[in-house]
Amino acid sequence: MRPAATWLFVPGNAARRFAKAAAAGADAVVIDLEDAVRPEDKDTARAETLRWLSDGGQAWVRPNAAGTPWFEADIDAVAGASGLLGVLVPKAEDSASLAALSARLAPDMAVVALIETASGLHRVHDVATAPGVTRLAFGALDLAADLRADETGEAMLFARATIVLASRVAGLPAPIDGPSTVVHDADAVTASARYARSLGFRGKLCIHPAQIEPTARGLAPSTDEIAWAREVLRAADGSAGAVTGPDGRMIDKPVLDRARAILRL
Image 1 (cartoon, helix red, strand yellow):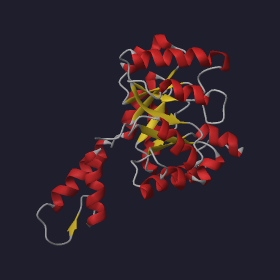
Image 2 (cartoon, rainbow, N blue to C red):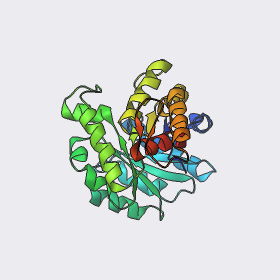
Image 3 (spheres, rainbow, N blue to C red):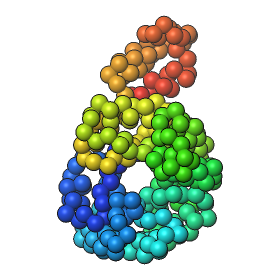
């Protein structure tokens, strides 16, 4: 199966929006108990989330981070819920904590580790190979705040490249990039997703349903890329020797691999 590309957050204390989020067309819906919920609303959000997951609804859940006053209650509440699809772990930093979390969930429950702190980035290879971790995601805004850096493409390039590398070395699917802070500018949302894909990401978090379609468009190959890939495979079909592709480059194994990857996407 193709790993989920578009991941839509919905606040855990907005139960009236759960069904709308589920029908919005994202590959995955994440009920957020962390950043989107004020401390005084945490208990309500947890109860509403458990109700949804126990009454036929399905979703991922982002609990509050380990070490916060709400983490244990969040995990206790959702761990056995029939509709839980997986857990998106905020501020993932060490393999021991992730292994302990995985042990509390149902067998083979998916765990996505969010890298969004300096410590998490420093230990990202250990995080990527922690028991239960099935994919990595990137939280650029939180990391930028932790590093006291700007949240620009240039400032976050090392972090993004490191997360892509760690995912590949660990044999995980390509990681999920953080959300665009722009909501209603479709071109900007698409450009943000396209930039993430150029670095090796194959998923992106979304904070509003309006971001889903332009994000999916940015994560997908362009029509020019698809045409190029088809021409490459057509030129190489049945050839026993060196062949020149549509762009004048010799077609060798890496070129063929890239063309096939584009068409798989």
